[in-house]
Image (cartoon, rainbow, N blue to C red; front, side):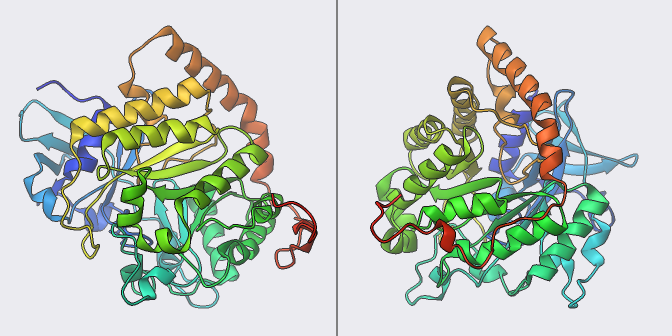
Length: 422
């Protein structure tokens, strides 16, 4: 067998998972296994070293499909490596990120910080609001790949105050240099953007970090302008499936109460307001036909956003747990398209400092999948220039500062009754 490059190995590990050898001492060396939020981070956090860039990932460990994996993680002479049983010559060195000290701390209210937020790669992920409304209906309208309803209130705190979040983010920034806090939320009984606003303002004023937000799209598009002025740096629109039939079948709540078009409208609105490469459309690869996934990637980049593509993981407790893990060969095609679509559309990726998302193959991870052409070299040259040019901007964004916008009263942004809808 040929040796896989870092992105190919990352994809194959997402598709097949990894077994843990008895020589490993993960209870001492690794972050704890953390089944929070939608559940995609329930595996092992590890880093695939590369001279060009290190690749962070969360490798499946517990799901039934992992039993057939050829990959085994072992520890030898104090270092970790992954061996491929299909060829004894294929040994890949890996790094295991340690458990941060702040995981053992509590907020001033007594809440364990590890139940407020969790590191997923190098960023801090936080679920806000109540458990997704779709999990509380009878019959359930929950998305069929998701396990949020099993995790919120069990493996993570059901309620996270603004003070809990600020103190946790400060600890993560001070100890590990976290630069990005990403909020996500399921369907709420009120507009999730209203719920998010106080958290965003507090992080900007008291911590100084980049802030991302993923929530059910609001039909009041003017609220996105409000959140931008409060300090949101990135919106992610998680519509999962481009094929309308798959959207309806696997996302019954979103189909009935939201609709696919609402995701497109909100994504296109923020892309126009914030500019190219600032926002993302999130989809799942490995369930709908690959042609639809490729079409989703092309659509997302066409409106100026970058694709966040999750490789489907059949999680314990999810309605879709019986489905097979995707085929490696198809996923390579998908992520090659991610990189090349960003390149064609001139989407700048990987500019912000110290943001490596372990739940996906990041768009700039996928550079290893694309052939070395003049076009690629030119794109990478422009991307490196843009990253250097953007550094002062990010430093300003990550400096605590007063935000002269109300987090509770967005009336200044609300259109007048006779104004046309945004």
